[in-house]
Amino acid sequence: MAAPVEDAFRRLFKLYKRKQPLVELSGVLDFSRLEVNGSGAKVHPAKLSHSSVSDQDIQSAGLQPISKWKAYGLENYPGFIFISNPFLPGCQHHWVKQCLKLYPQKPNVCNLDMHMASEETSDLWGKSQEQLRHKGSRKKESRSLLEKLRWVTLGYHYNWNTKSYSSDHHSLFPTDLAVLSQHVAAACGFSHFKAEAGILNYYYFDSSLGIHVDESELDFSQPLLSFSFGHSAIFLLGGLKREETPLPMFIHSGDIMVMSGISRLVHHAVPRILPCPDGSALPYCLTLSLSEGFPIGSSIIDLCSKEDWDVCASYLCESRINMTIRQVLGAGQTFSTQPKQETYPCKDCEGSQQQDSEDTKKLTDSS
Ligand code: OGA
Ligand code: MN
Picture 1 (cartoon, helix red, strand yellow):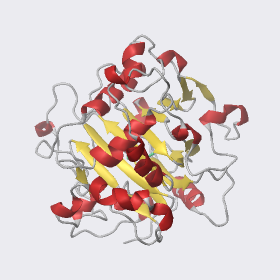
Picture 2 (spheres, protein in one colour):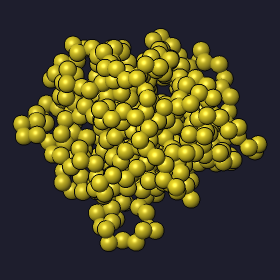
Picture 3 (spheres, helix red, strand yellow):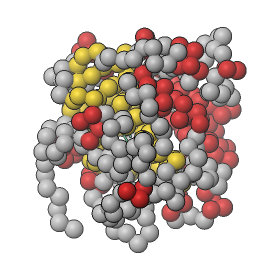
């Protein structure tokens, strides 16, 4: 394979991916600490549609009333909205648990299916929970199955080989996640958004997600929604061209990013996952419990038991989970109207060659 061209995006990706020497992070935009913005980026409050979802419905998805959200836009990125952790205390637990316990279950698809028998990849949670609960006392080399999970696809299952979706590879999209996504999209002005496909990425401290554009969906007029839980990451938001220098920013647990308009089609990547700066095992917001009086009975989120949260917390001590939710088809559109896509090889698919890790959407671990 020819050596990839060194463009501005790749230069920054390599810089932030590097652990030694430690890169200077004062130029990384932190939406949770805008009073010390050393990035040079021009940030402004984003306009939200406060009346699009009732406070009751938004609360039932585990979110604060829209009027309380801290949502921002960026001068050079029309259509980009960053919502700084709008989740209510204790409500991220439900989504973390779903990403670990429920969403990896069949008929959803995960990276382990590519090289393991179906009996082995069924019940990843059941097969891993004891190991995770006793993680403190076990040797580092024995990673549980859950810790080998790198991606899960939902709804229309993304085909990493052909970089496309198809009508014949589809399973029911989880209802709770569809509701959460529709509420967030509506708050951002997209009241007709339909959650049709999801890619869940599971990162370790040594994982990164290569430079890519999400362009496999057939309708770009609908936004791409991204939800993050667990350890913080550095996210690079680039331009339509790889030559444009990307803007580095932190994504913390609970943060939501909405990419729409021109920003729906920009290059982006996650070069690095970061431990908590104060040495804590988990970000502070994940240590909070549900407020007394939270109406769990009328909510789409369910109570995460202490037993389940112990497993999730042990998992999250070294990781980050990201869910990106997409609408694939436009109103009235079908797959048959779609021209045939160019094919690309990828790492975890049989019979393919490995691509350079900086240039593929696939999440890779440094060796
Ligand atoms: C993706 C993606 C970003 C993230 O899955 O397409 O860009 O923060 N994820 O993991
Ligand atoms: Mn992406």
